[in-house]
Length: 69
Figure 1 (tube, rainbow, N blue to C red):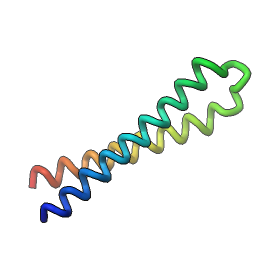
Figure 2: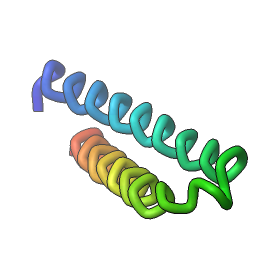
Figure 3: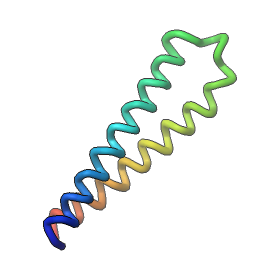
Figure 4: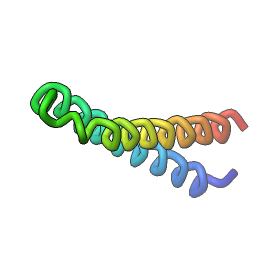
């Protein structure tokens, strides 16, 4: 793997982590500020948060695999 490919994986992992953190904050804000009245938003925000965290986990695993190779 070239240095450029590794840097691209690192960038993708950082971006995925940032997005996951943003979604987690959105979920936190819902729980802290808008429940119980905002309960209709819970399924969508929870799914978005899960998807973002899964994307980060996949990017992180790809990066670790590449670093070990």
